[in-house]
Image (tube, rainbow over all chains, first blue to last red; front, side, top):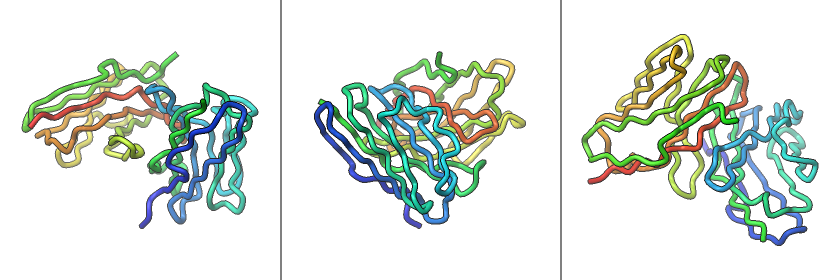
Length: 113
Length: 111
């Protein structure tokens, strides 16, 4: 069974530009989560999808961040316009059921210059 | 305010010895706790979990202990192996899908 995959693995952009991160969850996992780790700190929850519906986006930093999961399969997280403080590692995770263990992807390392 | 704390940023242990990683939490509503292991340039990998109705869970070389009165959990690795060298994250949830993570402890197992 393939794990959670994320693309790109790294992204370096300038302040003000737009970046879109993609996550492909494990097949059959209805629940998809986005997390972020900034500057070696804790991994913080951003939002949660059940299929194509956003269930909780309480962790999204501000309205420069937009997440979508059209069709309930892969998800994208767009940052527009990017700011310096958006730099960090963005992780995606998925789980089959709501109370089941979340499995993480390798992350996308975003650097905003 | 950090609800899950890992106060030791790093730990070095000799191969074959026991590694003990600690985690403290402040939210008494947390009812599910997990440990993830993370290698460089990879995502966190699930290691072991424990429900608040238990005080111990064991899986091979890995054991997690939960002390609810002290709001403390620990991960024991016995015996430690060089391949265990990684960053270990403690995480907790309060009846939801939202995991609250600690800042991680970097374990180095010396051969």
